[in-house]
Image 1 (cartoon, rainbow over the protein chains, first blue to last red):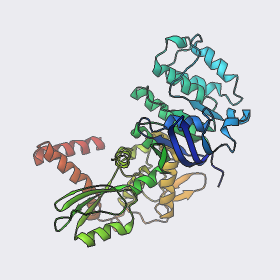
Image 2: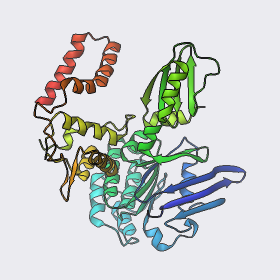
Image 3: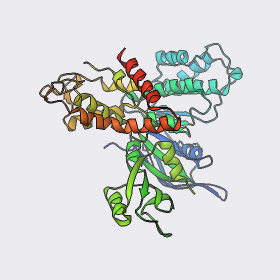
Length: 293
Length: 138
């Protein structure tokens, strides 16, 4: 087992008296494609910036390629790609200039792939950055970050300003990157359907805490919704162990559980003389169940 | 049949993990005899690229199918239906029609519900099914 690419322990970040991240524990294994999801204001961007050393943590520990991100070595930086949520590039440069300029910083720059990506995303070499739309800027920033095939690629809402066609192109490119050995990707998003195709792992950030971090397949295997039809009306104190949410009236109940085990269904059937149907949930439904108040 | 990725269809937004969907589909192809002993499956890379899913997802499905004996790994060539396996296409070993129909049932139930919601008659709903089936053959 190789060391995790990113690892945090009791990570905390506050801005003045406002705590944004509390007690974040997370280990991202090499080769994982992690989708980081959370509601607006849950701390996704803050977490990403702390992991990359763009913000100083308040307490706890963070390790990136085994180093402290606040004092990252030049070699570690050259293995890292990052596209922020809001892209800022030199407005006076043309596309071809920024590509040439950025390529000079990276030994691993692959000019052929950079050209392929520019073509694929229809970015004319002679366009000036100042005149480009947010979507085009985001595409350009992605080209710049993908072209040196970084070992770790961190993307903050990479598809937020992209149209569906560009989003699909982006996902293909991401999948292509991941085909090459051990590339690790961490991306935040609120578009769960994109994540379902590419992610191997899911991290859910809620109110500054990682409430779930696991393989995506394992999450889908574990989080389920049960529809219970009992022989008699259910009592007012009806409850199911490990329930994320439960609703019931008369003899029927709908219960979302975070960790379905083999025994639970049998227990319920026996206790309430009930018929229990298990429903699979997709990511969006899982996300909503975990955020039910 | 040498299957291509076109023989497979995954729903990423389904609650069933993608690797499980692939496993179910390979099992169905083998059980029905559509895939015969010696038939080779698309490479992990090919399948992942065509279906636009993570390679790890495909590897995971293949690994599970291998450990269950549904597929075997040919060194350097990828996955195939074991040559020693009984040919499910031969009438004597084929999984009975009733069992294969059972497998189709959940999809039919979903279809029936939606047809009812749309207030389609049985014939109208079946006409849609027929036309889809016909489209697949041509």
